[in-house]
Length: 151
Image 1 (cartoon, helix red, strand yellow):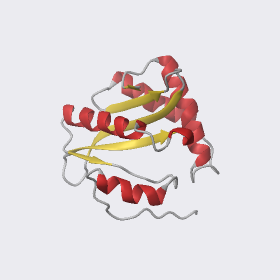
Image 2 (cartoon, helix red, strand yellow):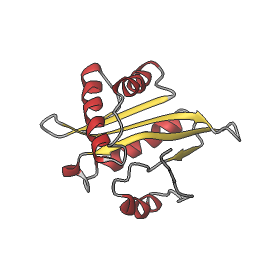
Image 3 (cartoon, helix red, strand yellow):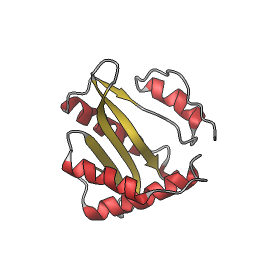
Image 4 (tube, helix red, strand yellow):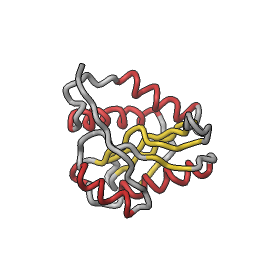
């Protein structure tokens, strides 16, 4: 089941699952900043028109996925753009409809809050090749790439 109303207990669980995402991702060698993530979760409560959190639970109540997003102004056009801040589905639930349901909830929230476009960033290094095939099938256009370099 997909939920879009966060409470404190669910926020704690999303925070913990975020740590799992972090450990699986290309960011694993860096510290996980729980305080920063908690602030994002809190913003989804105090500014629900700007910050979004959806999460998914199995029938037994176990948290198995989350989707964080925001609406921000596209700096060179001043248009409201919805973008993800993080999304994750537990490995044992990948391939299920969980991600698609959370994405649909995010897109509906974005429309309801006057965003003109949804932009998804895929920078974790998890299932990158599958994502390049999946997102265009969902109506997203693939633009550019992400490059990073340790300094």
